[in-house]
Length: 163
Length: 191
Image 1 (cartoon, helix red, strand yellow):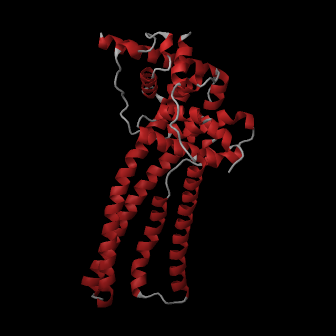
Image 2 (cartoon, each protein chain N blue to C red):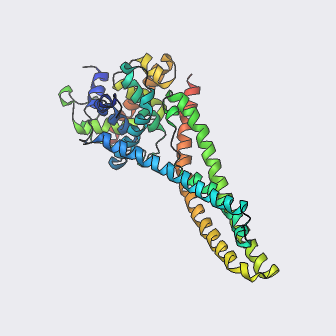
Image 3 (cartoon, rainbow over the protein chains, first blue to last red):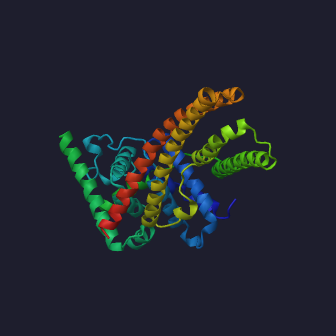
């Protein structure tokens, strides 16, 4: 076993969320996670800087994820009004229904907007996201702005549909 | 709490299901892939050595000459089919934009390979039909009638399997190709 493998296992929550951002079907999520872990296993001997393990594994996860062909339907179902983003009180954080809404909304975004948003939600800054995606920091800003605008638009649309 | 914090909170509340012996599962899968590659290599070497030995020792009979073009076409196609079209580890270490560009080129190649695989199956079927007609009706070689018939049946089965496989595989490859093209276009459009 590679000496950094325990560190990879500690990054499993981040890898799992990345996988969930690409695949909706629970069975396919497991399969995709396995694919990601196998790719990391094969790439791990080439890791130069152990301090950069998380960006390294997440970069691989995004590359495997974007080449994964989703089996689920692109358009997810809408949730009730009170579960919408931005309308709930802060103490409802952690609500699985709202979290599910977020993942469905993220999966509905084009990959080019989805990737920077997922990385930002993991806590990466613009420069780190730019380095991982191979684009400029300005471009990251543009994409994040568009991604957030789409999430808001979707939330408002669903609110209007339910009203 | 800001809007971003709320989104990040919702994002992070998604946790992976408990999974025991993760490393063991990954190692098992890694070993299985290596066995698969070894099997492909062994199969190719066995077939090549059988024909090479027969050709070198001058023991090639009419029957072997008859099926030789079939196997010469079949084996490379089989090898291409057995190999799954996964991204290579060295490509996966690239940035997402670079990976998308590389993957797009690979997918184009894979789609072209599928086309070649189908054409090869058609060519083998045409050859088998021609051999059957040539042996039975034109040359009237009784000794080769049975091998020619077997060849025709094999070519027919191979054609049906190849057609089914190519159709099924092409759908997935095209979907991935379109997704990658969109990603590359998005990278170049906003650069």
